[in-house]
Amino acid sequence: MITTALLTLAIVTQDQATLRAAPRDSAPQQAALWQGDALEIRGQRMDYLQVYDHRRERAGFIHVSQVRTVSLQPEEAPQLLSVVRFLRESPGAEALGIAYTAAYLKAAPADAIGAEAFDALGTMAERLARRASMKHGKATSDVISAHMEVAAFYGVTFKGYEQGGSMQLCYNGEAFRRVLALPSDAEQRARAALAVTRPDCMSPDLHPQERLALDQWRAEVLDKVSAVQFAQLSEVSKNRLRLRRAGVHASLAFEQARRAEAPAAAAQRALAELAAVNKPELTDNDRQDYNDAAIRVGASRWAAETALPRLAKLTLATETGQAGETCVALYENKADGKPGKDAVAKRCTYGIVWAASASAHPDGKALALAVQPLDAWRELWVFRKSAGQWTIEVLPPASNGPELGYVEFAGWVRGAPQMLLARETRIAGRLRRSFEVARMDTLTAEKQAGDPGTLAAFGRSQDAAWKRQTVILR
View 1 (tube, rainbow, N blue to C red):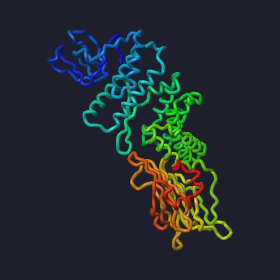
View 2: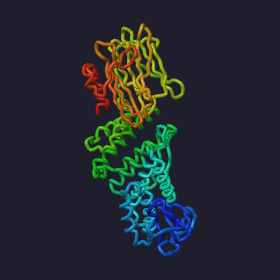
View 3: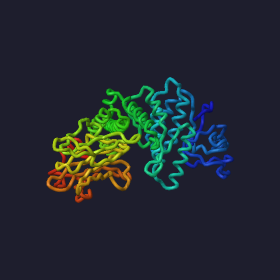
View 4: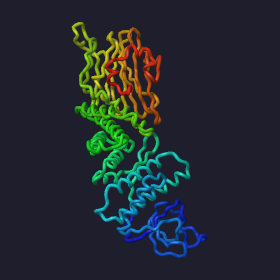
């Protein structure tokens, strides 16, 4: 940060500006400076400023065309804020904008500093982190790395998280937390809440207890945008808040179920937020967030269902296994409708068994059950009877490592040994939605399409409850 008591300083405005040993173009280069570097002015000789670079602890001379002289007098604060407003919306000038914001915070009286400066600081820092997380050529990467070093000099902190085999750099959100603590308008508050609750800026190594506490905090932060402020937001901002709230409450529902707490309220909130999204107002950049939120909600949607299904020929029971395990046992019912003495199939899991999802085939020789091992990953267990023996097959959302996904039962095909499946996944950042007619004996897809309307079996045999409850048909 700018900590000197100087009333004026020079801010470098160009990348790779040259700090020279003497006030001449032919003088040896002391260092390469970058936009946003702040220099202490110690004098002027000809068209060079004599300066000292506190970040590098090096003195030298820099041409006046490569810097802007900035006054830190209180009366100059409004002018500095005007520059901050301009640079806030200038991609590629984040380091320079952060430097001007630091100068403004130094110059302005404490009682005159509001949420606007911190909103701008956070916006530029977050944009810089996003740029740094993208793939670039070496020259561009070197520039971005230099800009991040400049930002770090002003106290801006970044964290890195591994996501899908690549490094995601994130701003730690300190400026946005100040926005939430200060009086701020609706848009500023929404931007801050969205920035500090990003799912891609959460450590994947969190303990379940830590993840629950973090998601509870995220939900509280998102609700700091009051109903009155929410009504004042643009449709774009409303959509973004709804999507983030949907994803957070879907995760909360899963975590509450793991702790044997009632997850229905969180799951219903997630479904309601997703349903409230104004789809025609989604920007191109927001469509992936919409799909991601829908997958998260879809994976946990069974948490909203509390009524257990009535199975005529089969009985499904759950019991506690080893520490953290839930065991599922299947029984064939006797003629009087009561379950037999011994289970015909049994399997244990550390995931959440959604008993409300159980759907039995009319002939009593198959049953489908949703099991959710992770907050954004739901599998389908298929119990089948063949030649008098029961087996249990686990169908994952996809076989090639989706980042998010779920697969769900969509109906038994009448008059044929087939079942209907629906899958939705995100693989390598791309959404894939698939509707399948699968063989009962092998569970392989005989037919599949991206639109269920093109599959005759879906028109004849899709389960009414699935059609009513699923989010894949959004």
